Image (cartoon, rainbow, N blue to C red; front, side):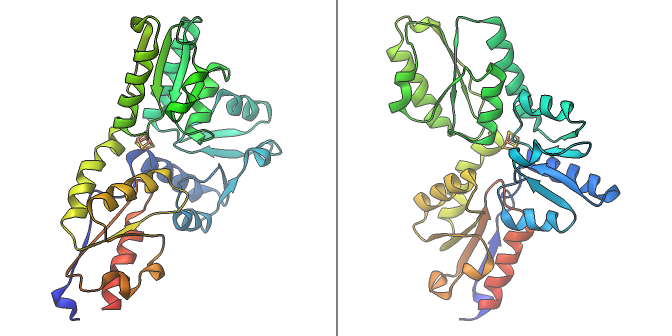
Length: 289
Ligand code: SF4
C-alpha cells in the first residue's frame, strides 16, 4: 500500500478538556520552581501523560500516603476533593495547589448550599460509585447524598420526600434524562423533585462530533488510557458509528490487520488524551505503511 493513497487525520477537537489543561499547567508551573510536587491521585487518567509529568518531578500519592505527609505542597486534580481532604491538609501543614476544575467547584458549592438550606431534601447524585469527583460531591453533604448509577439502585430513595437530583459532570445527558423521568414517575408528589443537569458540555458536546468523525473514516483509532471512564464512553460512541473502531493506549498496539484496505484513517481520543499521544499514533501509522 502506498502512503500517498492513505489519509491519516487527527481529530482537532479531541484531547484534554480545559479542566485538565489547567491542572497540568498548574503542575508544570510549580515544577519549574521545585524539584518535587505531590499530586493526590492520577492528575489525568492517562498513564503516559502521568509518566511525562512524573519525569518532571510530579509524585502521585494515594489518600493513605497523604495522611502521612507534613509541611509540603500537594496538588488537587481537576476532579475535586471532599472537605475532609482540605481539613487534613490544614492540620498537617500541607499547602494545597488547588486545580479543581471551576465547573466541578461550582457544582460542589451548589450541592453544599442545597444540603445546608434544605435539610428535608434528599440529595441524589447520578454518578459512578467511588469516582473521585463523586467522592468530592458526596463529601459536601457529610456523606449523606445518595449515589445512583442505574435504575436498579433507585430503591435507596424515599419517594415520599423531596429529591434534589444532580449529575457527575461526565455522565451521559440521555442517561440523566431517563433517570430524571423514572424518578419523577415514582415520586408521590412529582413537584417535590428538582433536577439540576450539571453535565459538563465540554464532554457532552463531543459525542455528536465524535459520531460524525468516526462515520467519515474507514478505520478509527481511538487513543486513551484504559482507566479513563470518558475514554470508554467516547470509544463506544465511535464504535456505534463505525464498527472498525479500535481502542489503543499506545502506538505499538496498532497492527496492520486493523488497517487492512483503509484509505482514510481517523485518530481521535478522550478528554484525558494528550494531543502529542494522538500525533504519536498518527506517526506510527504512517511508518507502518
Ligand atoms: S470534563 Fe468539564 S468539568 Fe470535568 S474537568 Fe473537564 S472541563 Fe472540568
